[in-house]
Image (tube, rainbow, N blue to C red; front, top):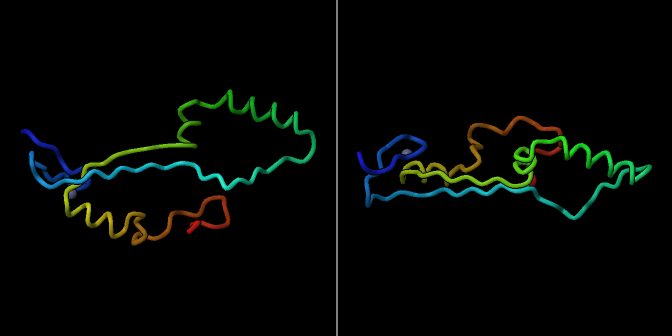
Length: 103
Ligand SMILES: [Zn+2]
């Protein structure tokens, strides 16, 4: 059957129908503050370089930048725009930081 499907509800989106692409880019926010270690900086840099070399490059990239795109029908787009962070489902589980939200 020609046409595409809404990724959220599975509704068929025939050619020429109203459909939306949700394009999401998530990237690390840098506030300009570097946390310099106390003690031997050179030793710390070597330690970090070793840590980075042992990490999976894909995982490393995901930590810095990720993008994804979803095709949605109008109903699912409307619901997404009303609550893009799914706050109606409650906050995300608390991470290691003291604050869950930056804005
Ligand atoms: Zn839908």
